[in-house]
Image 1: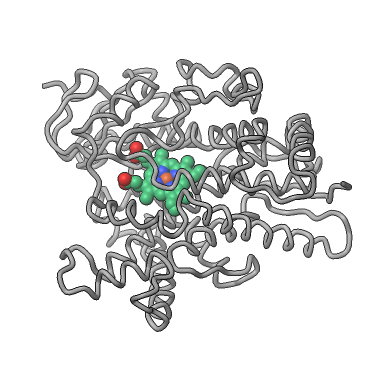
Image 2 (image 1 turned 30 degrees about the horizontal axis):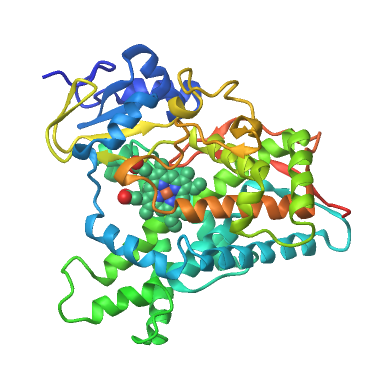
Length: 448
Ligand code: HEM
């Protein structure tokens, strides 16, 4: 039985050293695994410490993997059903969600004006401008709470989340493969800061859960937490439901939804800043369709150019990202190779949206026009930032609304300028989700 080919496995290390070397040379795990696919083909077999991991690259292999019933494993089975059923009630995919996102964006616009302090311009670190607002859209749905963008508690939480994402990456942290590092090098291996950050986020969630319990009225559930508490209070609930599990769901939603959306918006503004032509064209459509009115989700239908800008921002994030790891539910085959039960499989989405067989022309350029045919939006089949199949992203509707409404609203009110003394470094911060390296932009008020 043939396991997928890949770099040689050494005792104890497996192929960790080769992956690490390629990652250090190229700057990211997505580039390192893309390079391995050049040598070994679209399905690469790795071993990190004792853990075999399969990395999949390119549209054909990624689709085969995503659609395989045998490769759908993940830890959250029953809780996923709960989420799918109840998230809709509190916003996902409904009008409520649009209202919630619009509310958040208007707070952000106020915050930007306030930061201008009576002038008509301000400089921001763009990679963190949106983060608290995005966290709010998620937290409002789950726990009914929002925080001001200046709130220290929320800024700290956001910083913790992005730190956590830098410590680990898609094939895990070194200490998860070599547990001895936890004892002999807790600081150097990142284990200590991982644990500390994890505990602090957990504490934050627990505090909000405790204050939530005080206002809980079983007959009037306000949000997802209330529905979960109702299930916990019913005598015959499934054993897997518990307060700890509720906190784990909150943590998963934060982890899955905040940095992904925030970084997609940050990539979008990075390219908009570098492409004033695209910015102008987007603003022409905004002025024509919206005038001074705030955008809502329904406007997407009448704003093909802005919808295309949204898609291109999502592509610029997605092409540097992986899907969440899948696990083989039983012994199976992928592309003719043998995949033993419980092996982890991750798909590098670069091949689908940026690689040579992606079907995207000039893939490294930000070209919204690529999605437009006769004035209508056409989404190419390899556009897969949210994955595919039964495990595809559960937050796609919220994420797309957030990216569309935040980007449209900011462009409606402001111009985004490159600061010549601070040109952006086009490198990325590698981690679970890729982020643009820290960049600044000058935001000026538009004269409408
Ligand atoms: C631009 C933003 C986002 C992107 C690009 C994105 C992308 C993805 C991808 C690629 C996956 C894995 C698909 C697979 O494994 O096949 C995923 C899973 C998931 N996403 Fe998102 N996501 C985004 C935002 C969100 C938001 C806002 C939420 C919710 C608040 C969310 C919740 C989830 C959950 C719960 C899963 C796991 C689903 C499961 O295990 O079955 N995501 N996302």
